[in-house]
Length: 383
Image (cartoon, rainbow, N blue to C red; front, side, top):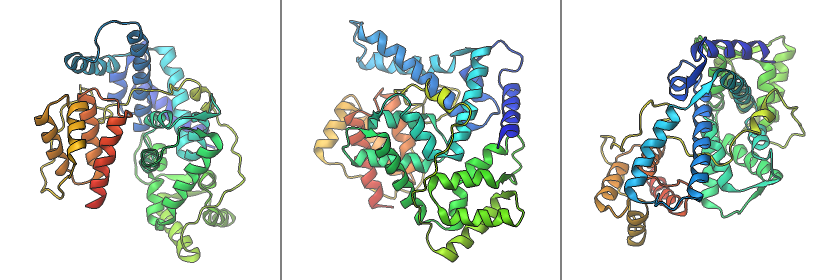
């Protein structure tokens, strides 16, 4: 379906990254003019490799790697190591090919692809493995937000493949049900944008067959009927603008976008299994400035009028100061002040990521999750 487009994207990405060189660094990949989802995947991949090697080394070491000064320096070293990791030519070209195919699968069928990769090796998985896997995928941020929020609020010890597939479908269905036609079309923008590379014309059209797969993945039967009607009328492609209009017509005719469980079993495309088998289930969380070519910097408060006061009880305040800010009360107060001036939870999340990186905090530790949960509830009150 996307064979020619995929080969074209791969060829341009090769030219704009490794070219005729025999090797390429992660820093050069991130600086290259290639689609953002590809950069996200490569960075997460190498951060996972570094974490794996680092953990193996620490298991046998008698040195105190938890010393605050060591952790601060180690964080800087890790960033530099990741950015300067070198791929040999054959290794990079193979990985680029697999990555592009996996990204396309994810863009077209996000639910099926996440489930396939997550359960490639085991019949069940932990919420921690799920959160770490999500770092590989850049597009459709709302899907990740829904899953992260669910994991933070629930106490499930693990998911089976069937449980996870149903959970993801249910969360996605509830999210889409409240959208207008134009809002639903905007969700698909990353798919249009990816195949608009390298022109970035803004008026790319997609094959109806691709859109059928996307809406099959979500179980939106009313939209599938609309697409079938367009096909009968001889239409083969739909632009992003046209899709918004068609989806709004569906909503006005049928009401809210209600998802149903469709008995559609997608056949594996290209390199999903190949990439899934090499995705590290425990990757190191990437820098919040995902494609920056520098060591992460300290969080900077956004200079806008304060819209909230973050209320943190004494117990949590002491816990966060001790466990996250290394007993530095001034640093804790400065961070809270910066967060109070952030305009949205999305921006606050970036500041929190910077805090965790600077203090070498595992974002999936109990202290980090408690910190996130406490702040998230505060932001929800003042939305």
